[in-house]
Structure formats: structure tokens, C-alpha cells
Length: 179
Ligand SMILES: Nc1ncnc2c1ncn2[C@@H]1O[C@H](COP(=O)(O)OP(=O)(O)OP(=O)(O)O)[C@@H](O)[C@H]1O
Ligand SMILES: [Mg+2]
Image (tube, helix red, strand yellow):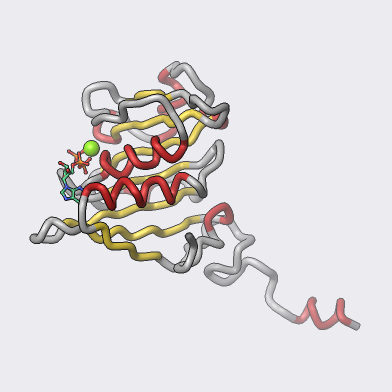
């Protein structure tokens, strides 16, 4: 009886945020970072959610705080620093000092696409790493489904609004009250 009832319902994963279909987009989570220290603290909180194979796409204008946030992520992951701008290196590998995944920090301006990371002969496997890519504004849409999009808007008073949007099944449970 219950089987019949279920069959009459739409298949799981066809609605946004239902959690099972790739390509779904979770409701965005907004966080304000008033200072660079708060931005790093947010990065440490995000790090607690991360596991090997995750892709983070950081977008926002020049000086928005993408690298600052990545510094906090690196701190939270316990990787070897310092995390600095990847602009002149394309991608930098920060190995874990605690037995966890490495952090690969890449600059999209130097990279044709995330898949090119595989061709760079980095000293780590992408599947065994967390990959954080800094992008300019508005180009993250061209990426693969499974990613956490982090968009940073810069306000005149130097505060930042950070928007976290989970894409794909991996991130579909990112909830506005997630700590
Ligand atoms: N609320 C804030 N959050 C983050 N950074 C802040 C904040 N207020 C001031 N800052 C400063 O803004 C700068 C942000 O620079 P950062 O290199 O992180 O930006 P970015 O987005 O990586 O820039 P780029 O596009 O050049 O890579 C830092 O100097 C940081 O100290
Ligand atoms: Mg940067």
C-alpha cells in the first residue's frame, strides 16, 4: 500500500533542495563578515564542513576577500601555510599537517577550467584534496554541478556579504542555520 502511495509521488530529487539529484541548488546562506578576522573565522567554520573531493568556487571583485577566506579555510583544515594569493602560481598545494585532505588553492584567471587542474601534475590527487578556486565575478556557472559557491560582495564600509550556495547532492543539505 505504501509502495503505491510513493509511486504516485514525484521521484525524489526533482525539486530544488530535495537532496538527491545532482544539479540541484540549495537555498543560499548569507553571512556578514565585518572584518578580515571575521572572514577568516567564517573560513574556519566552512572548513569544518569539508572533505576530500570538495570543490569551492570563490567569486567576487578584486580585494573582496577570497584569499582571506581561504586563509581561514586553510587554518580550519590544519594545512601547511601560508595561504597567499595564487595569482602567479596557477595553483598551490597546501598539504595537511593533521592527516586530512590537502587544500589546493587555484586562480581561475590562470586556469582554463577546473578540469585543467588534473593536467598540472600537482603533488596531490584532486579526489584526495579540497579544491578552492578564486574566480572573477559571474563565471562560476560554467562549472560542474557539485560545488559550493561562495560569492563575496564588498560594501563601502569594508564589511563583506558572503553568499554560500550549495550545488548538487553533496551540498543540498547546506542549511541557513548550519554551524
Ligand atoms: N570584512 C573584510 N573581509 C575580508 N577582507 C577584508 C575585510 N575588510 C578589509 N579586508 C581587507 O581586504 C583585503 C582582501 O584581500 P584578498 O586578497 O583576500 O581579496 P581577494 O578577493 O582574494 O582579491 P583578488 O581578486 O586580488 O584575489 C585584505 O587586505 C583584507 O585585509
Ligand atoms: Mg585573491
